[in-house]
Length: 295
Ligand code: NDP
Image (cartoon, rainbow, N blue to C red; front, side, top):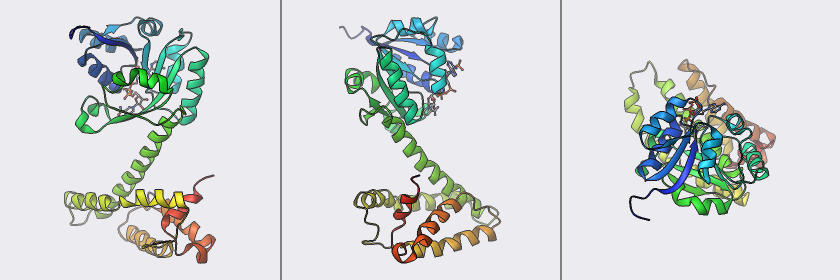
């Protein structure tokens, strides 16, 4: 192959904000790219940049062994691929879904004679094709598929394979996003508390960043305690103290005229753990409260 020859061909279905960003990185890296999008104007834009715009999902799928999906949600996969022959295809699904959707989609692909890998994108479109932005994609499912196409999959962002259970990419994705939302909730509460006071958000900002960084130790602390099931050794901030302290947090919110709706569920969880058996749990690390979440 000469340097100018197109590299491994692939097909991409879905040219929304994310799909378009992915497509541009494969074109820039010299891959032969076939695209399809429900609204054809978006495919025409990519065709002007060097992609081949297919007239239908069936035509797009037929063009390459590797077929990447980046559609809105799981239901849109059914509407795009209804009746399309997937025999012998390697299907990579970058559409966000739940673990159960990932597993069901893997079985669906297998029934149709395709190998399948599910993906969870940990990046925004602006981070795609920008390695220093640190974005990556979780993959799980067929190891053979992943190994075959690893180089192509690493073009838009880093690729992290997290096992052969096709539900695990989505599970990793949602676990990280859940932690992010909890953090966003706490940050929102912090800014709401100072609103109307003579404290500028931009002055609180570096303090918040620094504090969240220092409190990041909780991630490793929780992992260790959940593995050992030891919630009591070496505790420096015990549950009884935290529950008492949470009263100050809730009263401060009230004094400031701020709703506590974002933080009170976590306070309630800690309180539930404590009151279920104060003697047993009062001296524990707050990590013990996690055990109450599993239904
Ligand atoms: P957009 O809303 O920009 O694009 C959605 C895409 O899905 C479009 O191509 C749209 O086609 C297509 N689509 C929607 N419904 C159907 C349907 N019934 N049949 C066929 N095609 C359909 O979303 P994004 O591109 O931003 O997101 C795509 C996926 O990537 C999502 O699952 C999202 O969760 C995930 N993701 C996005 C991130 C982001 O920051 N944007 C971050 C991480 C993951 P049409 O153009 O015709 O409307």
